[in-house]
Length: 320
Image 1 (cartoon, rainbow, N blue to C red):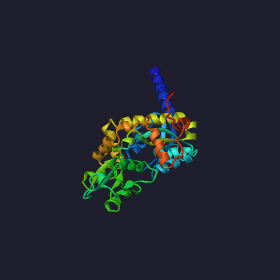
Image 2: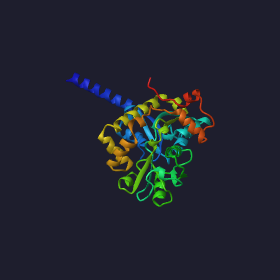
Image 3: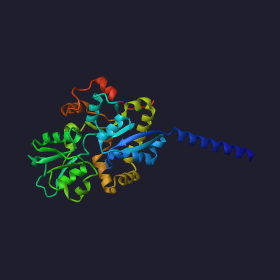
Image 4: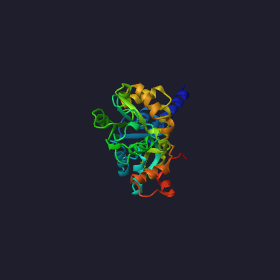
């Protein structure tokens, strides 16, 4: 009996020691993320709640920003170690000005999550009917502006692009008649579409040139990446496992719906129609030549980045 008690005590001590070691091994990373709702912005928080990051010894301190520009600035300043969903054009521009920022993954390739819509009673049925009409995009130099210019080329008409800001403010302007055609990204305006209050007339995926462009990325502060590369590797491991979970487990869909504040039916539409798994694959960074051409056109960079510069900018964390 004494022997069994001794062995049991030693096992308990060992388990306790392992638990303590695991707790001590949890490395903290500050992650800056844009507004709630967008699918890619859910991964860090939902993965933390589900234990995927803890499994890899990472504890996330999550701060929400007003969007990609603010997220990028938080990373550049060192207020955040990692930023989620930052526009690729803006990152290239900041890097070209020697900002301490690096790309460690992709959050969206293609523009399938962007859509343009009109009020249900509008006579505009397609963008071909929008000749001379006001058509919304978010801000100058954004992916929405680039996609809108592409849509204009595809439609073969000339309309009046207007910067309207965020999806909620754009929705208000569209429904009040200030703008003829609004833009959005899930979940904003999807409920109105399902209720028949608006009609979606164009999608970002309609523009062939953008289907293979990585438009938003995961970024890291260059100093943090250099000092703690292993923590970045473990963050990406947790990120990928969370992504797999979001596309495979009904409980994950419920968690996303609660996080985004939408019914599960809307959450499923967002995941299955606007955030196709291959498009949100963090290891898929593509179409860089086209991205750089857009960055030059919108004056984010003056000349294309060299191969050496791209190698410095894009550093996907790899496990040893």
